[in-house]
Amino acid sequence: MAVRFEGAFDWPSVEAVDETLSEAAGVHFRLQPPRPRRRRGRGRGLVDPSSLYDARIHVEGWVPTRAASWHDFLNALVWAAFPASKRALHARQHRALSARLGDAPRALPDRRTREQDGLALLDEGSLLLLAVEPRAPVIAAALEARDVSAVQNEISAGSAVALVFGHALYESLLPDERPSIWAMVALLPCPGPLPTDGEGCIRLADARLSERITTPGTFSQPETFRSLPLDERVLCGASVLRGEPGGELFG
Image (cartoon, rainbow, N blue to C red; front, side, top):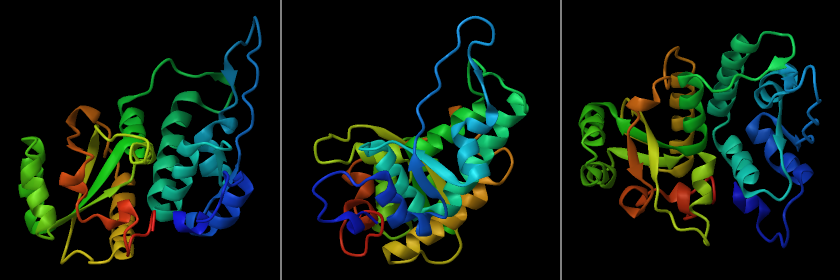
């Protein structure tokens, strides 16, 4: 997706991001409105539920986007690559917060629920691990044991493919950053052999992840999440992450 901006000497405008990516993403990208000033005294801190980030996406169909922001630009690229999963995720976040707020303006809760925490971690910091169903239990056990070598062996053997979904993680893959972090893993078992091309892997991952997100109760217990290092032990062979031929996100 990023190749569409190849040759740009400056940040693309939010309008250019929208023009380039909105068709693939299934949403529009618009400049994020300035935050309203908090009123002093009575009513301080009240928010209109319809003005919140997830409501803009789920109800109105556009993503608030900051100009010249790596974080928001990378988020737009992920939207274009995984549209079904991003729509499902923000729809669920919207429902979760709406259930707490109701329809009338009121103050935001002091903290998120465990479900909201889990979905936020998925959105910002997750690594999708497509795995053929017969090997999924073995991979799950390796994740539980933090056995990175065992997972890497499955990837090398073609039994699994790692795809970065969390847009905040992509910032750690930028040339001036040093990826020394662990990513939360969403293990996605799949029947049959995995696709051998980047585009096919992304389409399959988007379908499987969106299905998982729309299943009640999933991703609601962050304490049960397991992780993998965001380095060559896991990303080897994941051309979609590194701009190699066949890659679709940065290729």
